[in-house]
Image 1: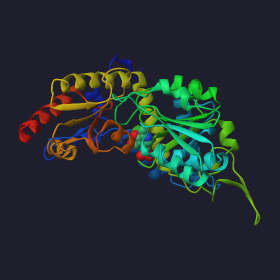
Image 2: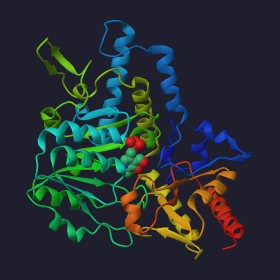
Image 3: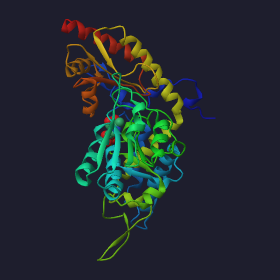
Image 4: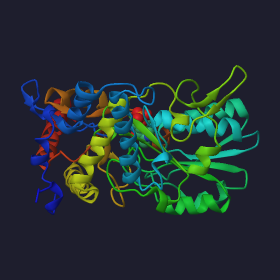
Length: 416
Ligand SMILES: Cc1ncc(COP(=O)(O)O)c(C=O)c1O
């Protein structure tokens, strides 16, 4: 029988790295250490090959023609929806809409549902921890429709103030938008509890799972959320891929987001009717090759096993947190315990995060510095920027040791 990685108890990151050609790359003669996974992950050879194979062997537009290539493309594209649907525990593949990214998925809900269902006086509740992509679309609706946008705060440590949730919810609340795992703090929010509270007032729940879907197993049906968004490119798939899960009844009832080819059933001079799900929301020629790459990424993750991926990341996380906590000149943001994904944001006191990131880059270490598209959260934490390291399945303890070594040198350099 063919041996898969998931036959072993732990992930072997050294074996996994062989599947990623990019790790042969040197940055200034130094091995690449990639700690910017929360922005986008590297792509395994199988994903790149799946895209390449599509262009070399099958390339044709979907749904449009009777010829063989078009038929095969259509099947491959549809299969990719099925893989994502199974991966997410959706009842039907028709509940999975392919988009360019998580941002587009949230905009689809804001325009397709919000624009047509919300009215003045209605409320949308989000959290201060949200990524800009789950804030700005709702601000757009506030401006267009006169809805009220409310925010659930975090405490000084960066935990959601869940005791304030019941006070913020009322029959006026029509949607709760909640980030599952924070792209800054790494904290995993207790979705079940939040969904239960939201349902008591009849609000819909949109989960921003961009930072959770790549790391651990999620079952949308069991969870009982109404919408869930994720980025394909943060889970090994090509850039330009993302998806929206929506409960079928909602997707059937909502208005399209983009209008034009492929999303229609009939068109007369007077009017048009809409195609069946999911095509109603996938206007125009989609990213067919990217979608096939996303399917290949799901296959790869399944082969490894999601429970092993999160266990590996958590091991790296506690190793890194333990090492960093030895340094009083480093300030780490967010809770150090509780349920987390492999994300750490920090600052070296007195050194700008861009300088830290620049020095790390000199040593071949890729990290992110800046506001991480979370300016309201940054303001709440009393900072403007931070350095962020984020781990994935191919990272190793050895790489963390190198990070720590360079951070020590940075301290010496700045004479702190
Ligand atoms: C929590 C969260 N939500 C949404 C997004 C936006 O994702 P995308 O760039 O795929 O639109 C990100 C990206 O970093 C994120 O971390």
